[in-house]
Image (cartoon, rainbow, N blue to C red; front, side):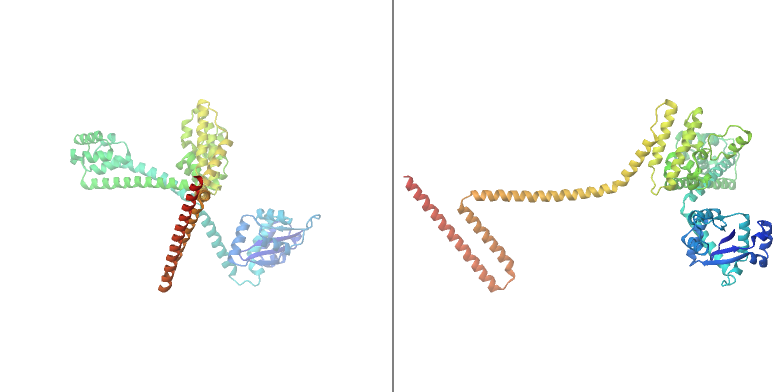
Length: 546
């Protein structure tokens, strides 16, 4: 069976054919010895085809696909063009040797080309890599090294950019720094207490908090100068006037030794450093909370920002945590105890880092393991939602927290919890309602517009109705009144036309005014004649009645 070799170089794809394998035999030692000798290796392996990459961007895309075990269209065309065709009914008389088993399985699935990846093939590919510049004649010396260097830089840069965009790196660094600061501040505070206790030993029993102790030590300085005038300042620091008075009374009868001014200055500077570290620790905690709400809002809402950040840092990233099953997440952080239990055949641990959650502490001793298993299940769901969902919201985290609370009540009081299906449905509905809120505002505006349009239409209809009613009333009125109104309307229209035409010449305006006056006089005379006619008609009717 003929063996072909696929070599993915930085400058392009190369296809080789191995001859005389029966003479060498399928022996890796023999191949390894012949690889270093170009004369022997050149007789065994020969170049069939070479397909260079079009550009550096094309080389990067091909390299990314090969590293992920995916065959690109360019690679498929290259293989189908240069390899013998494989018939469905018959078995292939050749095989393709590849370096990566993943891409070999993908090639065999898509193109039905049989692929193999073993030590023998890897040794042959090592020889191809060693003597590749001699197989490709058009390449100049140094071209391969330049292509490898450029592709390596671009590939690494793309991977680093991907990691930078994943902000869980910042969360991992922040939680590591937060744990380190807690240890350092604790040890430094103990050093301040021990150092200043040589001068004022009674202060340790009065002030228990490390931060307040450093603040009070910096404020008091020399205890011999402490008097009642400093009580308001101590009250502002401690927040308790009785304790401030107690400190002043203890300073008067203190058993501590005197310190020189230089020693007091060093104590004050060190106390200030401890205070600064404590303030920075608070700012770092706020930063961690905001970051966790951005990267994993559901996990933070379920188990808390600090515990969630510890889980992410221990897993390595949010993606790795999402890939973990809930059983692994449950004992995450207790690996030593797990392997010790497996070695000694003892009881395995029930919880790891999730023990710091308040839910485990609130559960009874017999239910701690059950609670840890249930909480790990919900944390696994929350981490997967945070990792793979496009829009971030705390709805699922809050619903999962409600489920854990209900499970606690079930263990303590026997109250039946809700089903997971119902809870998830309500969470999805609430998210959909939030997404529809902006559209509701636009629909409200459109409704307002439609209402205003409808009101305008109603007003127009009312005007038409009133006009129709007026028309009916006018029909009922006598004909004489109708004529008068018509004449008045005509005169008003004529006046309006005259006003519009005021921009004409003076002579035309005067003529028009005269015509308008004549029309007015005629209308008045006609009205008087009509009135006289109506009066004569009434007199004739009276005479006929008599």
